[in-house]
Image (tube, rainbow, N blue to C red; front, side, top):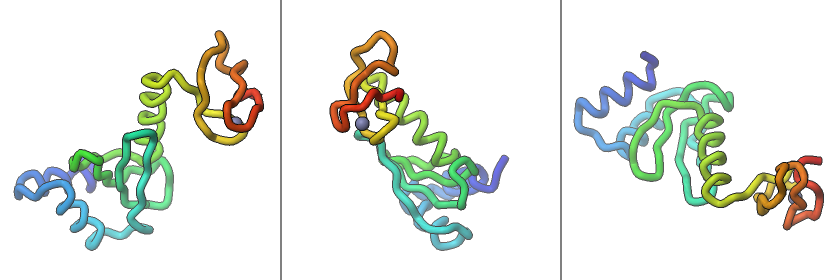
Length: 118
Ligand SMILES: [Zn+2]
């Protein structure tokens, strides 16, 4: 069990809600700042540990605490967003665009006009 998982258990045990526990972790733990991340309607705050895929404490927009990496959270949120909205992310400009082609590489970006897959 990681320190972040232990922290979440400790907050649960003491009956401290997610946002208050996250504020406490923000003050007590070493990190590089409190950051935010969003994809579509999904959003969260996390403690920046200096590496996209290192474990950290995440405060989900529903107020729950999660132990994950911000990169894994972002990857999962993006997959969910693409599937729910039938879009792909453009490799040139980074914006989402409609996914209408049989092969996602063949979609033309609505924003920049390039083929999303190059
Ligand atoms: Zn584009």
